[in-house]
Amino acid sequence: MREELKAHLEFFGELGIDGVRLEPEWRRRAEPTEPTERTAPSEPIGVYESPAAALAAIRDDLGADCSRCKLHTLGRTQVVFGVGNPNADLMFVGEAPGADEDIQGEPFVGRAGQLLTKIIEAIGLKREDVYIANVIKCRPPGNRNPEPDEVEQCEPFLFRQIDTVKPKVIVALGKFAAQCLLRTNDPITRIRGREFKYRAAILIPTYHPAYLLRTPSAKREVWEDMKRVRAILSDTT
Ligand code: URA
Image 1 (tube, protein in one colour):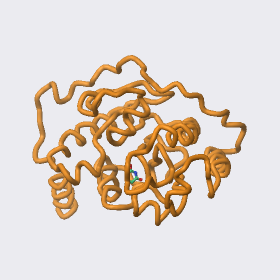
Image 2 (cartoon, rainbow, N blue to C red; image 1 turned 45 degrees about the horizontal axis):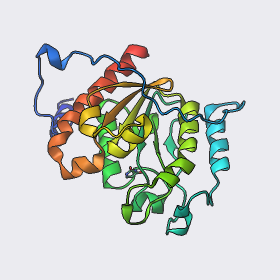
Image 3 (cartoon, rainbow, N blue to C red; image 1 turned 30 degrees about the horizontal axis):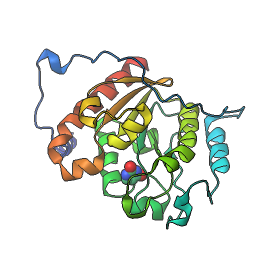
Image 4 (tube, helix red, strand yellow; image 1 turned 120 degrees about the vertical axis):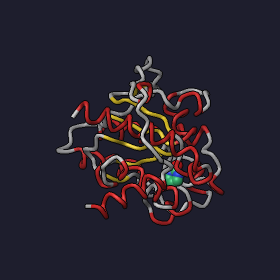
């Protein structure tokens, strides 16, 4: 037990959490703001026997050799669809696969992904409990930002994933995913710390784990966001 506690404290220390704040403002919940959701429709889910079957159908529709945008000619190894529990209450949305994801075919498996896994575990969940996807499913060359035509072709598949999994909470990882889902140009520093109604979920923007690797001091804010996620999930379950 003591070993377990020690491991937890070390882990929280690694995430940048070095104490407990008792002031009331640290416990107060942000009021949900007006919906600003991206209104692009998702195609009908259809009647499938389970969310897993619906996700399999979406993956089929997308196709292993998707050529809807130019990324299929720009060096991608494979389409990186999404991974996790088809019935998850919590979904993470990132930007696009990086080099490791492109090789392994799974989102968030590189260094940033390993940090994401720790963040998930910090709120008492396992990676397999949540669903993880990206706005676009193919790696942009040199990890450049996805371009508007690529997003336009690919995001309907993300919307279908969201409408199938029906998470209670969506965490948008980083500026790109948050701005894209919320249809805003507001900087991440302005939208993080707030919550948004998004489709049937509450969307919480937070910093991207790759940013945390470069800026460990931002882990404290991510921890605040994740505590909020944990509170919402335990309120509604
Ligand atoms: N960054 C992302 O946004 N997504 C991944 O899958 C990996 C890194």
